[in-house]
Image (cartoon, rainbow, N blue to C red; front, side, top):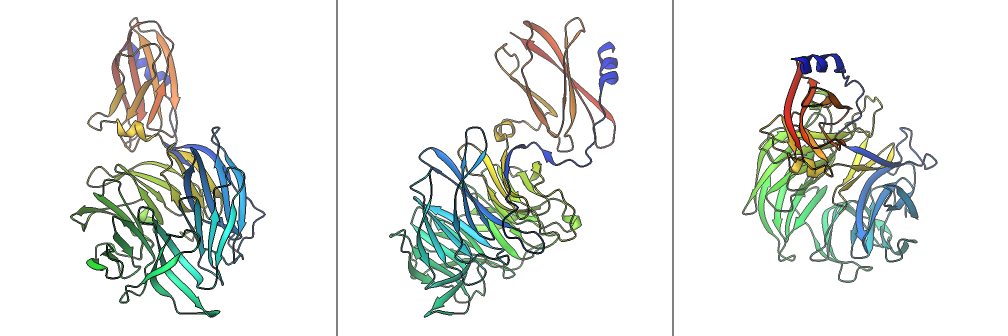
Length: 460
């Protein structure tokens, strides 16, 4: 009782108003306000990441072109080089960039643009434009590269023929057997008005077809693709924008780029796709999800005005475990903010591009959540603990983001006190003598009631 009274006296009331981040560490941000901007101050679009010779890099698109960054050991975005876009203007909204071998491929969906091919082999010093195909490419909305088969899929492609811009084609596929001279090998499917984006693995293509929904094809024989499935009517349907397949091939998550529409988690069985559950953030206030990448456990979403949102997708209905608001401004237009996401860097650092605020480098400690056991509200490990180890505490409640930690020795003397903000976990390394200690975690729950949980800790 004495210890509990001390907790009551020391507890700090935490406020969540204006909270920008939760379980995510900010590392760096690059923002160049000298770049051309439109009337809404939009300067940036998509981002991508890659590793080359054990060095991580980032790419960001802007109204003026493509920017290349080295990710330093000090967690900084070091601007290495810039390639001017074939078309650069304040009207540029869409650029898309992907990498294959030692090349980056960049497209734009405004003006009279091109397919730009950029040699990355000179990094970390510079990059070089080695291809600029404006004879057959005018505009392209999105690209995806099947790196295993060396194929570039282009969606929403507006070709140019004899200098004349043609009607937009739903999709084309190009061979990258010669990386600086892609060759057209497929156009279609002819009965689809639009392929906005796509994800391809093992020749199975998941095509995001806007208001026509989702289609699945087998492109094992590119000259004769096999139609597998069409999901053109589903719950909470909007504009089918983009999706991503988990590494184990069991889960596919896609976004509908429409106000108030939720993300869709799908189950994959024998190449058959079934929508399993819906999830999202602030959809009751007409939020809009944009681009998605997923692992086997987590979905990383560039969620426009909501910033970066991370969900645990291991349960049937995914739930949010982390976020970082790249766009804390208020706007009546709900498609500002976070546009691009890249979450596959070996270091687990995350790239997010914000339409107004540039490129963000963030850190999400996914191992903390991989090891969590949500059967316990408070999880502590390791226990017992040695003097050289750190103690990890996790509160398995998505409503908790601020709490207080108190540690008492066996005589009831307080020996450690720490307040934690904007996280549901923390690592501590108290310097104490071996013995038995009592750890208490206190927080205010969603009912605005004081909750205190205690556990015995053994320090060897």
